[in-house]
Image (cartoon, rainbow, N blue to C red; front, top):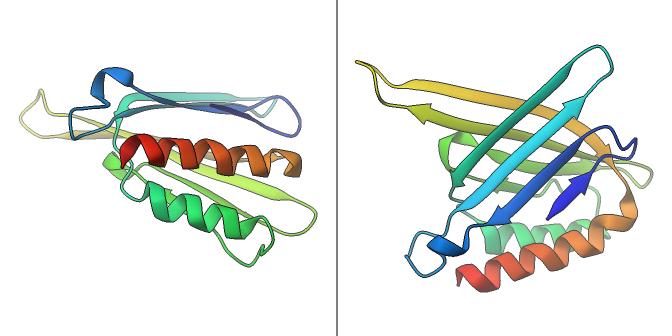
Amino acid sequence: MRITSADQHSWMEINSRPDTANSGYESFSLEASVDIGHGQFRGINNDVHFLNIAEFAASLDAFVTDRSLAPRLEGSYDSFIQLSGTVNEIILEFRIGDAFCGYARTLEFQVSGAFEINQEYLLSLVENFRNFYSHDA
């Protein structure tokens, strides 16, 4: 699933990894690219485990009509996706985290950012996350 910013300059992509679907540890690829004109930021983690997909899908569904909510999907390595907004704008905030354990100590890496998305994509986001949940259940 690809979520594109309202200005078409930034995006986030979330994909279920079919090779992990029946393993008891369903994994996702989480990637984002943000272009703010004078700088570009990009991050990817091909092994993120989401911790609250069912709750996030329900909260996201409620967010469609209640913008006082801020649905937040938590993931491994402190990764997250959160939506917030008003009647007129919706902001997708994210962090993609990872860690490397190949040295004497663990090194952590993160890319974070936010961008505005178009409201008309909310219902398709709800449906996509429900599908992720149904695969995870």
